[in-house]
Length: 290
Image (cartoon, rainbow, N blue to C red; front, side, top):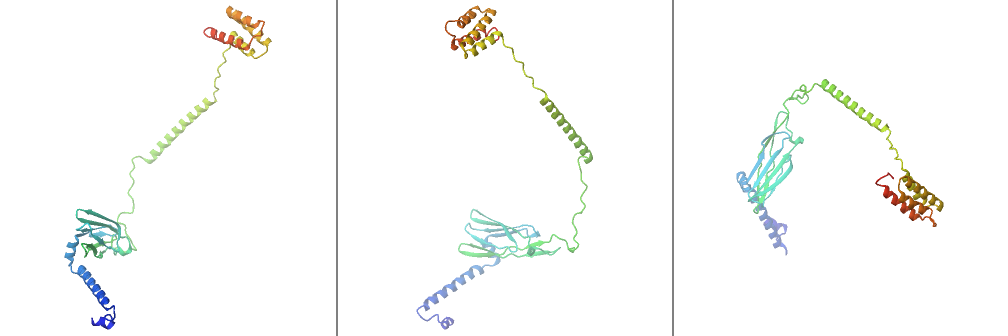
């Protein structure tokens, strides 16, 4: 109090506020000291829950697993594992507890023990806050052994023989190669035969069917249909030739009809000529080929 008075904190209108602020800081600092410093190591671990660190004896480069168990679902934890790095962190809240799991590894020079020796790691304490209080708990120590023997690194020695074992094969390589060569030759010969047959078939001329000769009646009916578009003389000639063919085919009635149309006083109409040709084709369809 005398020190504060000498500094001038008790004088003036703000003197009382300064005293109150200083008292609050002192109380808060004392409270933090009490919260963090009143528990023994055994009491801290019981208050936090439990801490696991496996394996406790590991080889260089072997991953570690750290588990922090908090007896409440609403807790918060801060943990550091330098020089190891946290590869994965997961939280699991079951029942009324919080379980935090850390996956750790380290391949840096800071984690390398001397060849043939071991290195002891002590990680910083974990800080867990719940119920308005903060607790600290120390992780177990971990011993990391070197994967190298005590021999000097200038003359390294392999743990296994450098000469690989003799290969074991199911088939004799020369015999298998000969068999594969024979199979390839057979396949090539088969492909050549298939190609030769395809080429021979492509060169073979395609037979063209011979045209079926038309009957005299079919030619006469075709002539009548074509003459229907020509002059009167061509019409009469075509109808008269049709009448001759019909008489030779013993179709007298049809021959008479064709001749009457050919030599009527009026010129033969194209419509009547086409109708006559269609009628005779239909009549001759079941007998003579037209």
